[in-house]
Length: 396
View 1 (cartoon, one colour):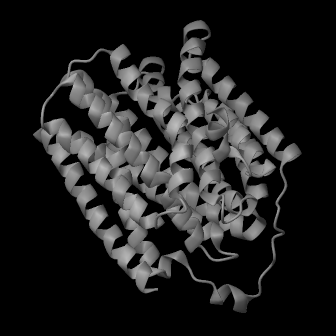
View 2 (cartoon, rainbow, N blue to C red):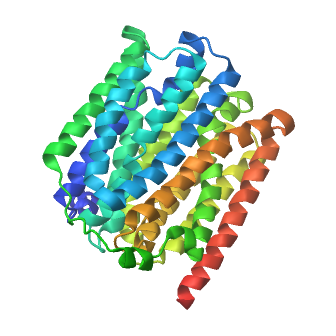
């Protein structure tokens, strides 16, 4: 049993394990972000409207940071981009605690997230470089496990810091952990494939993701999935509280179930499926599970339905996220991976700009039922686009 559990983790490169450790430390240290709304309202006295505007700045910072990260990755290499992002991100986390007016904080969070999210496309290109075709999806899955574990540990540690030191302690903790991740990046990792400077003619021959029609269809389908997934982060906890009448402890346990199941089952499931099925088809299966997870919330308002919905959503995530990542990496062209992976990562940045506003507006004006039906319809459109894409991949 032990050997079967560990089997999916074998034959992954040393660099992937080190990158996973760095990602774990970096994400576990992202303590300010989950408590940002509370900090802005309780410590700085901002209104909810102010907080909403600041989160929009956050989304735009993520969007442009991801785009710039892809550009820089193709120009100077993924290792330098990741190190720059971590090192200067550490300094900016430290500075952020001293920004107290609305515009200071709005611009500060924009610049911070822009620098922090340089890391994302560079990381996906690094995964591709540190992996083989046989273990690429499993490498992506290991990084996702590190991210999920980091996001699980981070809020718990942050709660202790707030209780003992106060909100200012979060900025120090974020700065310190990000600096540790930067030092590990500098000492333990190097760029495996040397960056080759291309001529203008070679650059012109490269396919741009913005002119790759099939990839644009894929991008829009994943963007729709992202808009739906944002509702899980932003609105679903409110639904549990307002409609199903769960208390904060029960909501926390239900949300924790998502991370716990992913930690236990994602790697074995991905290992089993990656050689047996077309990656886009697996993403379609995941989208169907996503749609069902939101649709059943309108059937009956009970703890049991909430539990089943969380199970469907979790397995939808396991099917959709790793294999959509792998498709994006396989679609990217040599020397142009940064642009492709940045374009892919920008789907979630764009979803974060639009998703929360859309979800809250529908709830405020029409109720939760309309939101869940709307999300189901959005996912249905995503499924149709993916089916079209799958048929065209066959033709290729």
